[in-house]
Image (tube, rainbow, N blue to C red):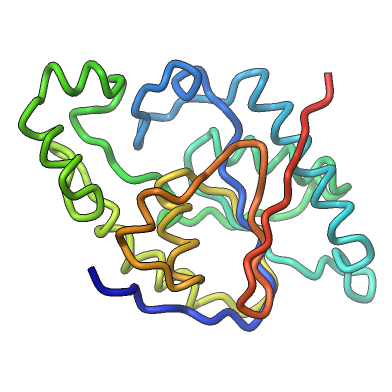
Length: 213
Protein backbone atom coordinates (compact mmCIF):
# COMPACT_ATOMS: atom_id res chain seq x y z
CA UNK A 1 0.00 0.00 0.00
CA UNK A 2 1.23 3.50 -0.85
CA UNK A 3 1.73 6.32 1.61
CA UNK A 4 -1.07 8.84 1.99
CA UNK A 5 -0.62 12.37 0.70
CA UNK A 6 0.96 14.17 3.63
CA UNK A 7 -0.45 17.54 4.69
CA UNK A 8 2.18 19.73 6.29
CA UNK A 9 0.53 22.00 8.82
CA UNK A 10 1.72 25.57 9.24
CA UNK A 11 0.25 25.87 12.73
CA UNK A 12 -0.18 23.66 15.82
CA UNK A 13 -3.11 21.24 15.94
CA UNK A 14 -4.40 19.29 18.97
CA UNK A 15 -6.62 16.28 18.28
CA UNK A 16 -8.86 14.55 20.84
CA UNK A 17 -10.97 11.43 20.53
CA UNK A 18 -14.32 11.93 22.28
CA UNK A 19 -14.75 10.60 25.84
CA UNK A 20 -16.01 7.11 26.52
CA UNK A 21 -19.61 6.07 25.81
CA UNK A 22 -21.49 3.02 27.05
CA UNK A 23 -21.07 1.46 23.61
CA UNK A 24 -17.30 2.02 23.82
CA UNK A 25 -17.29 0.20 27.15
CA UNK A 26 -19.33 -2.65 25.62
CA UNK A 27 -17.05 -2.66 22.52
CA UNK A 28 -19.96 -1.98 20.15
CA UNK A 29 -19.56 -0.30 16.77
CA UNK A 30 -20.96 3.21 16.97
CA UNK A 31 -20.29 4.83 13.63
CA UNK A 32 -22.88 7.55 13.06
CA UNK A 33 -25.14 6.40 15.91
CA UNK A 34 -25.36 9.34 18.30
CA UNK A 35 -24.42 7.77 21.65
CA UNK A 36 -23.64 10.26 24.46
CA UNK A 37 -20.55 10.19 26.64
CA UNK A 38 -21.01 8.41 29.98
CA UNK A 39 -19.69 9.48 33.39
CA UNK A 40 -16.25 8.06 32.62
CA UNK A 41 -16.23 9.94 29.32
CA UNK A 42 -17.08 13.21 31.01
CA UNK A 43 -14.19 12.72 33.45
CA UNK A 44 -11.88 11.93 30.53
CA UNK A 45 -12.94 15.13 28.76
CA UNK A 46 -12.27 17.21 31.87
CA UNK A 47 -8.85 15.59 32.13
CA UNK A 48 -8.18 16.49 28.50
CA UNK A 49 -8.94 20.12 29.29
CA UNK A 50 -6.81 20.24 32.41
CA UNK A 51 -3.78 18.75 30.67
CA UNK A 52 -4.23 20.91 27.57
CA UNK A 53 -4.41 24.03 29.75
CA UNK A 54 -1.08 23.09 31.27
CA UNK A 55 0.46 22.35 27.87
CA UNK A 56 -0.68 25.60 26.27
CA UNK A 57 -0.14 27.90 29.23
CA UNK A 58 -0.11 31.53 28.04
CA UNK A 59 -0.14 30.42 24.39
CA UNK A 60 -3.90 29.78 24.54
CA UNK A 61 -4.33 33.53 24.08
CA UNK A 62 -2.76 36.04 21.74
CA UNK A 63 -3.14 39.67 22.86
CA UNK A 64 -6.00 38.60 25.15
CA UNK A 65 -7.83 36.86 22.30
CA UNK A 66 -8.05 33.09 21.82
CA UNK A 67 -5.21 31.98 19.58
CA UNK A 68 -7.00 28.77 18.51
CA UNK A 69 -10.04 27.84 16.46
CA UNK A 70 -12.16 25.02 17.90
CA UNK A 71 -13.61 22.27 15.66
CA UNK A 72 -15.91 19.37 16.55
CA UNK A 73 -17.66 16.48 14.88
CA UNK A 74 -21.44 17.02 14.89
CA UNK A 75 -22.08 13.90 17.00
CA UNK A 76 -22.99 14.67 20.61
CA UNK A 77 -20.24 12.55 22.14
CA UNK A 78 -17.73 14.84 20.41
CA UNK A 79 -19.52 18.13 21.05
CA UNK A 80 -19.96 17.31 24.77
CA UNK A 81 -16.28 16.41 25.03
CA UNK A 82 -15.38 19.74 23.43
CA UNK A 83 -17.69 21.64 25.78
CA UNK A 84 -15.99 20.10 28.82
CA UNK A 85 -12.51 20.81 27.41
CA UNK A 86 -13.47 24.44 26.85
CA UNK A 87 -14.85 24.70 30.38
CA UNK A 88 -11.54 23.50 31.82
CA UNK A 89 -9.68 25.97 29.60
CA UNK A 90 -11.80 28.82 30.94
CA UNK A 91 -13.45 29.61 27.62
CA UNK A 92 -16.82 27.84 27.95
CA UNK A 93 -18.56 30.41 25.74
CA UNK A 94 -16.18 29.99 22.79
CA UNK A 95 -17.72 29.46 19.35
CA UNK A 96 -17.07 25.90 18.12
CA UNK A 97 -17.11 25.16 14.41
CA UNK A 98 -19.03 21.93 13.74
CA UNK A 99 -17.60 20.14 10.71
CA UNK A 100 -19.27 17.08 9.16
CA UNK A 101 -15.92 15.90 7.83
CA UNK A 102 -14.83 15.06 11.38
CA UNK A 103 -17.67 12.61 12.00
CA UNK A 104 -16.94 8.93 12.52
CA UNK A 105 -16.59 6.30 9.79
CA UNK A 106 -20.07 4.95 9.05
CA UNK A 107 -20.31 1.35 10.24
CA UNK A 108 -23.59 0.91 8.42
CA UNK A 109 -25.40 -2.34 9.25
CA UNK A 110 -22.82 -3.09 11.95
CA UNK A 111 -23.81 -0.18 14.19
CA UNK A 112 -24.75 -1.46 17.64
CA UNK A 113 -23.04 -4.83 17.26
CA UNK A 114 -19.83 -6.12 18.85
CA UNK A 115 -17.20 -7.64 16.59
CA UNK A 116 -17.94 -11.08 18.03
CA UNK A 117 -21.56 -10.61 16.94
CA UNK A 118 -20.47 -9.28 13.56
CA UNK A 119 -18.24 -12.32 12.96
CA UNK A 120 -21.23 -14.59 13.59
CA UNK A 121 -23.81 -12.59 11.62
CA UNK A 122 -21.65 -11.43 8.67
CA UNK A 123 -18.83 -14.03 8.43
CA UNK A 124 -17.84 -13.21 4.83
CA UNK A 125 -17.86 -9.45 5.34
CA UNK A 126 -15.93 -9.85 8.58
CA UNK A 127 -13.30 -11.98 6.83
CA UNK A 128 -12.97 -9.34 4.10
CA UNK A 129 -12.41 -6.66 6.73
CA UNK A 130 -9.72 -8.68 8.45
CA UNK A 131 -7.98 -9.21 5.11
CA UNK A 132 -8.00 -5.49 4.24
CA UNK A 133 -9.06 -3.19 7.07
CA UNK A 134 -8.10 -0.09 5.09
CA UNK A 135 -10.23 -0.41 1.94
CA UNK A 136 -13.07 -2.76 2.97
CA UNK A 137 -16.42 -1.03 3.36
CA UNK A 138 -18.73 -2.16 6.14
CA UNK A 139 -22.11 -3.36 4.77
CA UNK A 140 -24.13 -0.20 4.02
CA UNK A 141 -21.24 1.80 5.47
CA UNK A 142 -17.74 3.15 4.81
CA UNK A 143 -14.07 2.24 4.90
CA UNK A 144 -11.07 4.10 6.30
CA UNK A 145 -10.13 4.95 2.71
CA UNK A 146 -13.44 6.76 2.18
CA UNK A 147 -12.49 9.38 4.79
CA UNK A 148 -9.12 10.38 3.34
CA UNK A 149 -10.41 12.95 0.83
CA UNK A 150 -12.72 14.90 3.21
CA UNK A 151 -10.16 14.91 6.02
CA UNK A 152 -7.39 16.01 3.67
CA UNK A 153 -9.58 18.95 2.57
CA UNK A 154 -10.31 19.81 6.21
CA UNK A 155 -6.61 19.96 7.06
CA UNK A 156 -5.70 21.98 3.97
CA UNK A 157 -8.35 24.56 4.82
CA UNK A 158 -6.98 25.28 8.29
CA UNK A 159 -5.53 28.78 8.52
CA UNK A 160 -4.33 28.86 12.13
CA UNK A 161 -3.84 26.86 15.34
CA UNK A 162 -6.66 24.36 15.94
CA UNK A 163 -8.18 22.26 18.70
CA UNK A 164 -10.17 19.37 17.21
CA UNK A 165 -12.48 16.75 18.74
CA UNK A 166 -13.39 13.75 16.61
CA UNK A 167 -13.49 9.96 16.69
CA UNK A 168 -11.28 6.89 16.74
CA UNK A 169 -11.58 5.93 13.08
CA UNK A 170 -11.36 9.38 11.59
CA UNK A 171 -8.68 10.28 14.12
CA UNK A 172 -6.47 7.51 12.79
CA UNK A 173 -6.90 8.79 9.24
CA UNK A 174 -6.23 12.39 10.26
CA UNK A 175 -3.07 11.43 12.16
CA UNK A 176 -1.88 9.39 9.19
CA UNK A 177 -2.40 12.26 6.75
CA UNK A 178 -0.39 14.62 8.95
CA UNK A 179 2.39 12.13 9.73
CA UNK A 180 2.44 10.38 6.35
CA UNK A 181 1.85 6.87 7.70
CA UNK A 182 1.14 4.14 5.11
CA UNK A 183 -2.41 2.69 5.13
CA UNK A 184 -1.12 -0.60 6.52
CA UNK A 185 -0.17 1.26 9.70
CA UNK A 186 -3.20 3.55 9.87
CA UNK A 187 -5.61 0.84 11.00
CA UNK A 188 -3.36 -0.10 13.91
CA UNK A 189 -2.68 3.38 15.28
CA UNK A 190 -3.76 3.62 18.94
CA UNK A 191 -6.61 6.05 19.65
CA UNK A 192 -6.95 5.92 23.40
CA UNK A 193 -9.38 8.05 25.39
CA UNK A 194 -6.77 8.86 28.02
CA UNK A 195 -4.42 10.77 25.73
CA UNK A 196 -4.45 13.40 23.00
CA UNK A 197 -2.26 14.16 20.03
CA UNK A 198 -0.37 17.38 19.32
CA UNK A 199 1.12 18.26 15.94
CA UNK A 200 3.62 21.09 15.62
CA UNK A 201 6.26 21.63 12.94
CA UNK A 202 5.61 18.14 11.57
CA UNK A 203 6.21 16.42 14.91
CA UNK A 204 3.52 14.40 16.72
CA UNK A 205 3.54 14.45 20.54
CA UNK A 206 1.23 12.29 22.64
CA UNK A 207 0.02 13.77 25.93
CA UNK A 208 -1.25 11.37 28.59
CA UNK A 209 -4.24 12.33 30.71
CA UNK A 210 -5.57 10.94 33.98
CA UNK A 211 -9.10 11.23 35.31
CA UNK A 212 -9.80 12.66 38.75
CA UNK A 213 -12.40 11.12 41.00
